[in-house]
Amino acid sequence: MQDLLNEIAEAMGAETERGKVADYIPELAHVDPNRFAISLATVNGERYSAGCATSPFSIQSISKVFTLTIALGKMGDALWSNVGREPSGDPFNSIVQLEHEGGKPRNPFINAGAIAVVDAIMMGHEPKETLAELINFVRYIADDESICFDHKVAASEMAHRDRNASLAHFMKAFGRLRHDVDKVLGTYFHQCAIAMSCEQLAHAGLFLASDGVNQPSNIRVVSPQRARRINSLMMMCGHYDASGEFAFRVGLPGKSGVGGGILAIAPGQGALAVWSPGLDDYGNSLLGTKALEMFVQRTGWSVFGH
Ligand SMILES: NC(=O)CC[C@H](N)C(=O)O
Image (cartoon, rainbow, N blue to C red):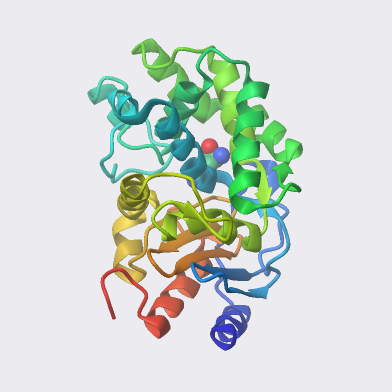
C-alpha cells in the first residue's frame, strides 16, 4: 500500500495540467498549486501517506460532512424537513432551485444546504458556542487536539460573502433560517476555514468506513445506519454537479472542498484524504480526483467493484 501511495504521489507530481487554485476567496489564492498529499487510514489501524500529508490546508466544504453528522445527532430525521437529499445537478453556490423549491436546499452539501445545516445546529446559541462544539467534535474524531480554525481564511470569506449571503437571505425570506443571517454566515465560514492535514482528515473520516465506529478508540460516533446514509449522500451529492462523474471515475462516497481536498470513504476498508489545490471547472480538485481514480483502479476498492 505504501508503494502504491508513493507511486500515485510521484505520478501526480509529474502532471503539468494542475487545475486552477480558487481565488474567489482571496486568502486561498496564494496556495502553491504544486503541493500534493495523500493519506489512507484503514479500519485495521494501518496508516499510509505520501507527499506533504502533515501540511494543514483549508478543508472548506469537506467540513459539511462533519456538520451534517452533528446535525443528525441533534435532531435526527427532523433535519430533512429543511434540507433535501437529492443531487442538485447545479454548481455548489447556485441559487436557482431555491426559488422553485420553497427555499429548501436540495442537499446538505451545496452551500445553501450547508448554511441551513449550520442554522439547524445553532439552536439559539451564539456562533462561538457552535464553533466550539464543532471543533471539539473534529478533534475527537481525528484524535488530534491541535486542529484549529484558520481565522484569516474565515475573515477573507466573510469579506467576500455576497454570494453566500444571497443564498442565506433568500432562505431566510422563505422562513427557513431561524438565526441572524450574519451569525449563521460567520459560523459557516469558520466551519469551512478549519485547517487539517491529509493525515488528520483520513483519521477523522474513518468512522464512516467502519459502520460508524471511531478507530482505534473503538467508540461509536454514529449508528451503522447513519454512517451508511451519510456515505450515500456523499456519493450522490459530495461533488455537486460533478457527483455523477466522480462516481463514474472513482466510485467512492466522497466530499470535495475548494481548498483542493477530497475525503473519500471505502466502506469496510478505510478513509482516504487527498490534497491538490488546483480545481477543475466544477470546483473539485483536478489531481485529487485523478489520484483517487488511480487508487481504486489498483485496489479494486470502488463500491462498484473492479
Ligand atoms: N465548495 C466549497 O468548498 C465551497 C465552500 C466555500 N466556503 C464557499 O462557501 O464558497
